[in-house]
Length: 334
Ligand SMILES: [Zn+2]
Ligand SMILES: [Zn+2]
Image (cartoon, rainbow, N blue to C red; front, side, top):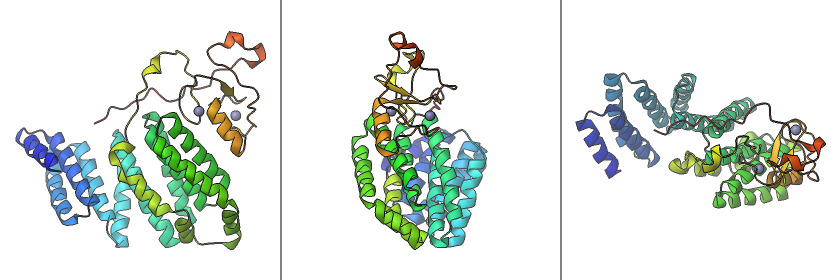
């Protein structure tokens, strides 16, 4: 915090508007996170002044984000409603700033989940699912595997709220596989425990379907609040982007649909062109044993070794996927 303030003073002296604005943004967000709302308001006012003078779209959007973030802390529904409107407007502008878009989507999810509970409205949950799809897309494109893990984890939790056990287990499996593949060991353990818990509670969740239990109670049972709190706590780690060294080594990269890593050992190719690495294919075989794309059973008795296709029998030759997985689009970090 002290460092941020020093940096702010220096950037102001040098007339570095964007850097000074970024310091102000970080200070404001830190203060809000620490519940020091009065001081957060002062910094937000400074940011507003800077925004008016600079006419810089980047500063304008981040100012609006901070404003919504502050409004969101209010216990009054109209303020939270205003925050929601601002966040949606930010998304509509489709400004190319990875962090801004991720945090706007996450904060919007959080707001909508509060609404789901207070209004007991399943329709709002569909809106959350749309945001989650956007987050997954963003995380994959920018190779933020930590975010990709967390969002799949969240997707599993949301599936619990709609009592869709199959989807919940699929998402948890995928979250766990991504965490394992990219070495997020603590997170992998956490997801694995959660998955075990779910496996033991399957009959309880099945019973809930018949009892027509309220969404608010389901949110409590799924531990949603604690989950969101944990998810949003670690700002820096969450949006870290990973750049893999071997990315350009293989001309024809084979990427596993589940863990998004290069397939280096055995590969399972579905008739729909979906590819799975050995570990992910086995993980899927333990739940439904079907392809995530086309629902065809995954036959793990027929593995194929990639890159040495000449060694494989003719009928087993792997076809190229229609589209290359999206992995070239790495936005620069601000
Ligand atoms: Zn995999
Ligand atoms: Zn398939």
